[in-house]
Length: 244
Ligand SMILES: [Zn+2]
Image (cartoon, rainbow, N blue to C red; front, side, top):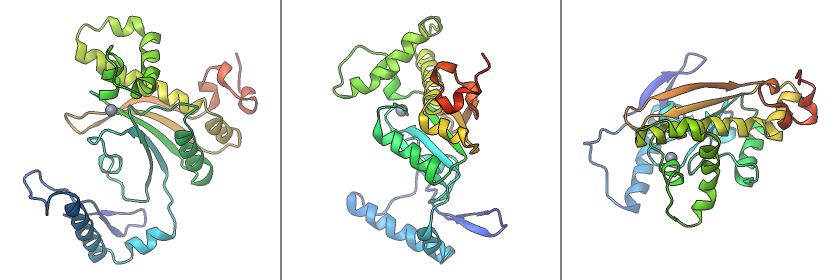
C-alpha cells in the first residue's frame, strides 16, 4: 500500500514504504525475495511519484538525526512516518553515544555541521536486549565491553534502580536512564557545543519506544543550550555561559 501525505508546500507525496498486513504473503522467501520486494517497491513509488528518486538523488536535506538501537523491531523512518531523505540515522546496540566511537562521532559531525540538522533524537526502546544483557553477569563476547557503558549508568543510579522490585520494570527504567545518559553524551560532545557556540539552532531530545504498542514516549529531556550541561563538560567557547 502506498500512503499519501501532504508536504509543506501542500503537494501530495507518496509515503513509500509498504504497510503490509501481517497476514499478507510476501513474494518469494530468502534473499531473492528481498530483491524482488525492492523492485516492486521502486516501481510502486515511481508510479505514484515519477520524480521521487531523481529529486532525492540530487540532495538530502534532513532536519533530524536519529540515534537508535539496532534492534530490528525499531525501524527509525517507519516509526515516525518519514520518507527517505528526511531522517539521518545512526543505530547501534542499545543506542549508545560513546565519545571514542568514531563511527557515531562522524555521523554526529556530518549531521550537525554539513547537513545542519536542527534536532538530534536519541530513541531507546523498552525491553532492550542490550540493556538487559548489561544487567546480567553472563559473558556474551566482545559486546560485553560495549555494554559496560550501560553498567556504568546502572552503578550511577544504583539506589533508584534497586528500589524497583519488578525485574522487567527495572530493565525499562534503565532503558530510560540510558537514553537520558546518551542525550547528555551528545550534548557534551565538542560537535554539539561548537554548534551552540556559533548560534546554530540545535536541540537534543530523549525518546523511548514501546515495542508493545508502537508508541514513542517523550522523556521530556530536551537540551538546546550549553547552560543545561554541567560546567565541567563545557568547552571554552561554551564555558562563558557558565553562571555558576
Ligand atoms: Zn535495543
